[in-house]
Length: 119
Ligand SMILES: [Zn+2]
Ligand SMILES: [Zn+2]
Image (cartoon, rainbow, N blue to C red; front, side, top):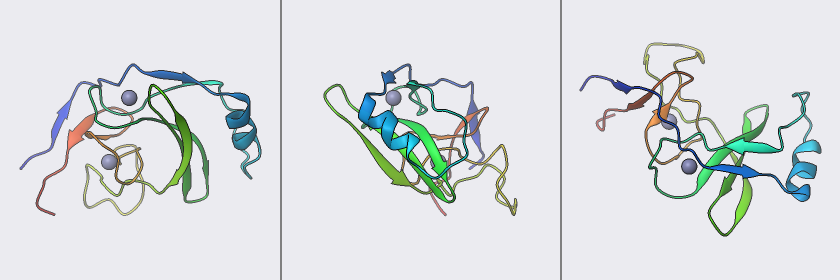
């Protein structure tokens, strides 16, 4: 029923981008600062499925690098619609900072939480 927030426990997986991936991000029409060549997974520790790190955001599209032990790819997503404060009218620090459909708990800059099943 209530929001179940916990200490931040992020997946420890990291990935080093290859030349093609760096070139892809460099080619996006964004004024974002230069991309780091190494990214860390932003999902909850112990999550299912591929690891994921946000590479760049272009308008409403977020380009996420997703990887497993054997492969990696870059995919476009929109923001996860979950937020800890349902009444908020605009994005805030407490809104989920992951992509729509991500595995594991929702994550803001400070906490992970489990959304109510009944929506
Ligand atoms: Zn991960
Ligand atoms: Zn979420």
